[in-house]
Amino acid sequence: MQAVKTVKLKLFKPTRVKRQLLFLLQENQQLLNNYIGLIEKHSTTNKSLLHSLSYSRLRSDYKLPSAIVQSARDKAVEAYKSYKAKKRRGEKSSKPCFSDRVPVRLDKRTFSVIETDNRFRYFASIATVEGRVFVPLLGQRYQYKYLARLFKGELQQGTAELLLKGNEFYIYLAVKKELSVPRPDASFTPIGIDLGLNNLLTSVILRDKPSGAKFFSGKPALKMRKHFSTFRTSLGKAKLLWRIKKSKEKESRCMRDINHKASTAIIKQALTVENPVIILERLRGIRRKAKSGKKLNRMLHSWAFAQLQSFIEYKANWNGIPVVYVNPEFTSQRCSVCGYTDKANRKGNSFVCSKCGYQLNADLNAAINIAKQHKNFAFGYMLDALGDVATPLTPAVNKKEHKMVSVVDRGSPCF
Ligand SMILES: [Zn+2]
Figure 1 (cartoon, rainbow, N blue to C red):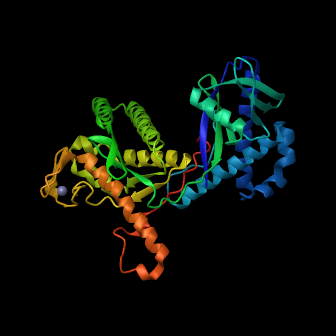
Figure 2 (cartoon, helix red, strand yellow):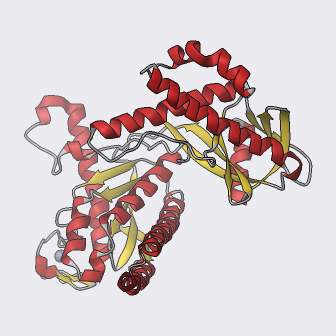
Figure 3 (cartoon, helix red, strand yellow):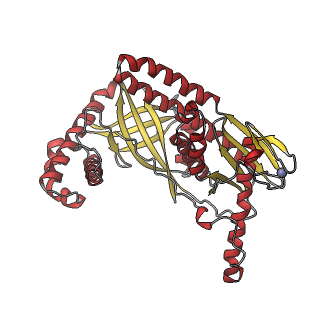
């Protein structure tokens, strides 16, 4: 399995080569739209057919490096295919028309990173119509780490996109890694994660005893959503639809940021454990939880939880940590000590077992129950190994739930 990450880097003051870069963007845009026209005219998305139909003419018309012409063809074909697929599904979609801000797709032949002893450690080398240009690459320290790993051979270079945002040029570089995520058996240490509204995320490491409980408060997320909601209500009266849309986008970005921070914290914790396996609830339970809450609670939509889970899974797999999804049923009502399950056990934010009297934070109790389910899966594996003999001892949880969801390719930025 391969995972891809996108490293976003800024080109530092490309004043001297700005003309070449702008020309590249402009030519690329026309070429992409030209390809869309060709695809329609010949009603084909076959790349080699398009190549033989048009390559020599387009090369002489545009004078772009040949690898850029090929990448543009591929990009046009992908855009056209996705437009057709949307139409088939009956979704709203219009024929691809590339704007003047459409990024230029570059590959190894047209883009490379150069390591130097200069004040700027890394330079971009970009093929343009007038030959290669070199511009310093600016990024955060963690982004430089990815570049360093590229040079060490730990990561491979994927496609890069050159784009213009405002007055600044950026390179979005995809870096790839071959993943090896182990299959978690009973020797693995489960880290149970409960997602909720009071605590966005509660995690616990379950060795012989639960330890290292971490709480990631849900208050900032709810406060943020309340703020945007109030703001939009005031806008709604004035019917400022455009500003409502902008505010929703900003809210999504804020939630995304919160989810990134929470998921990073969890991975950091998991990396302190030997052979960790992260246990998450399947999402159905989350939705139910959110529905039963107050109006404001409902506003923390299930997409926010789904996004948080996907971030956790993606970052975990990137670090070679397996992720397992379990049945969420009764995790908040079951006593993590004696197993007694009753709705009445849950008293607001605390959990008090009506049988054994055990008391603790309700989210933590749920996280422990989630972590405990790993044993059931490990047991399921053991039965697998024994074969038919063991069938009467059905594992407590359906094995189908033990799903290792593949890593989502987030290679190229959208345009
Ligand atoms: Zn109990």
